[in-house]
Amino acid sequence: MRLRLLKDGFPNPRERRVFAGYLLAAAVYIAIGVAVTDFLLSFWVGVAYIVLAAWAVPTIVRRLT
Amino acid sequence: MSWAAHDLEPYAFQRHLKLKVAFVPLLIGSYSPDMMTKWFVYGIHLGPWDLKASDPAKFHRGWPGFGFTHSFIYGLVIGLIIWKVFGSKLWGLSFIVGQFAHALTDTGDTVGTMLLFPWTFHFHLGAWAYAGQTGRMTDAAAYFSGLGCMWDAVWMVYGFYSWRVLTGDFFDTYIFKGDSFWPWLNRWVPRGALLTLYRAAFFYGSSRWIAWTIWAHVIHHYPYDLSWGGPHWVHAAHP
Image (cartoon, rainbow over all chains, first blue to last red; front, side, top):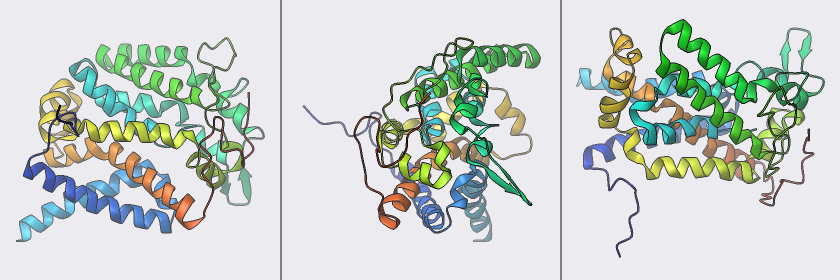
């Protein structure tokens, strides 16, 4: 019997790239949060951060290049 | 109380219920019991004043207090109001599912919730210590040292295991099409930003779970105590 690691199969390369971007954003968020815990307290700060890091910045970079 | 489960549970429900629920009211329902009370549980400084509940656990979960926000009847009443005011049965029901999930999850700690309010009995499993009365930082340290954080981890692992719920395809097929809120917001906000907004609560819940764990155990070396009702190094509140 083959062990299934993930319920929905395995992500394709494009999905893995998106996931890697979120992982990078998470690493920065966690580093800031551990240093300044107030950063972790607000849901809205988290939302603003991820919209900036995972959508706004990549969109701006794509338009500039 | 739970620190990340309420961010993560809606994705599991969304995966299984698909078009039967709308994500935004589901998430609002999941947050709703604590929305107006957490600041007063932990206390805030406002100029020369320190504002904090004299009995935080009772204020948060008890009666007299705001404990009714963690009851089924609260979810049903607010869900019914949403249904009638906004004319959306889907939004009303989705809110109820989210609020019920929160109320049930919080029965896991030592204070529990008055699920059947106005009956003021606290349903509680006592699996992890309720330490909101000790202040935000001690509560964080205690929560991320006991079984509560493991319960959060279950939802986080389940989310990654069911990763397709976080993909653009799932968003387009079930989230965007299932609720007119998203096409309405799409008039001003591009699809890419909407997808990021949809993923935000999962990102927030899982990232801060990791961050608080590092803060509690790598920076401050609080001991893990995964025994029932732990951690026992903190004073746990009871009903």
